[in-house]
Amino acid sequence: AVEPLVHLLHTGDAEGKTQAAHTLSNLAVNADNQVAIMRAGAVEPLVQLLRTGDADGKTLAAQALRNLAVYKDNQVVIMRAGAVEPLVQLLHTGDVEGKALAACALTNLA
Image (cartoon, rainbow, N blue to C red):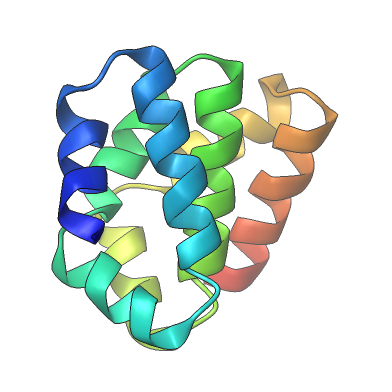
């Protein structure tokens, strides 16, 4: 079920990418789902959405990365994918929710 969502992150329009990030974020609260999400390669397209998405897309990408970063094994992958810089950018430019989720994601990566 995870692979089509990751595919949508790569190929969807703005709304499709945002919805995929939202769904992955919800799935990522479960450890077994996190393994599937990481194996499916979701981190890089989530970081790309964080860099180039609209406000909702950036917020939901930050939320998904926050949830994935709860587990230490995922933190290195997320940091190597370049998530820190766009998360810091979201702290400066995001709406209230985006700033809060970026801060939480960065806390989980620390």
